[in-house]
Length: 148
Image 1 (cartoon, rainbow, N blue to C red):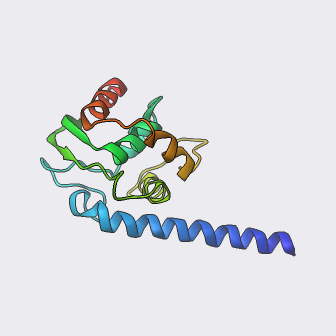
Image 2 (image 1 turned 60 degrees about the horizontal axis):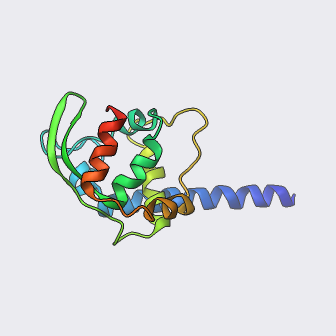
Image 3 (image 1 turned 135 degrees about the vertical axis):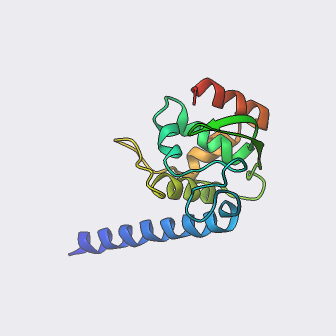
């Protein structure tokens, strides 16, 4: 019986994290990427269907952390559409657990399907990437190396 209680607690905790990721996405990301993750053609790229493409790349997982922490500047293509804007860096405004929650939300939302064996992002993982102190231009170079 105790193991059932622990399992229910873990499930409730997981749901709370998912809800906070959704709420944080709504507060910080949906203005540009829209509530449905479709973005705005020509202005802000979609996350729907694209996050899974990134995660399929060898270093895609850490790139997504870097993207949220340090921003991005440069011309990119997503689903055949060109975007040339600036993604703001959220590292100064958001804590490690908040960035992990947003990443876990977008990884499993908008029709995105994480790769087999995907493990949820953790605050410790975000903290380790935060130590890199990248620029938006360096994050752009990381994106180019992924050949997206």
